Image (cartoon, rainbow, N blue to C red; front, side):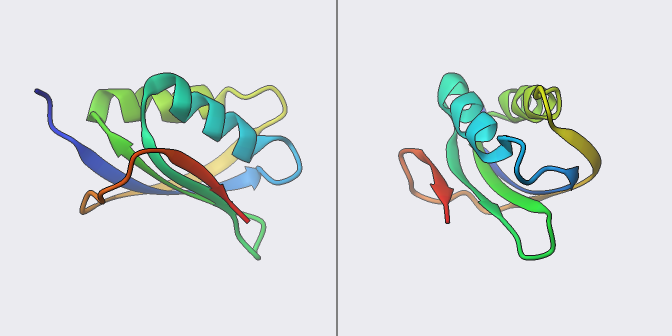
Length: 91
């Protein structure tokens, strides 16, 4: 079994009002990842995503390639995994 990690991501750019949260939700679900996505007051989007490191990297690339999404900056930190079973959109 491969290692499970949790990544705390923050995306800046044209990431609100362009379907970013829904793209993240559908991509995470497709890859079997858990976590959440949420718009921030400053116009960025925060994601916590949990799973295999290679799958998380594929998730990040797929989200960045979203149709109307333009990521200008992204931060990534590894944090302790949590006990959860799905990926959610937080409002």
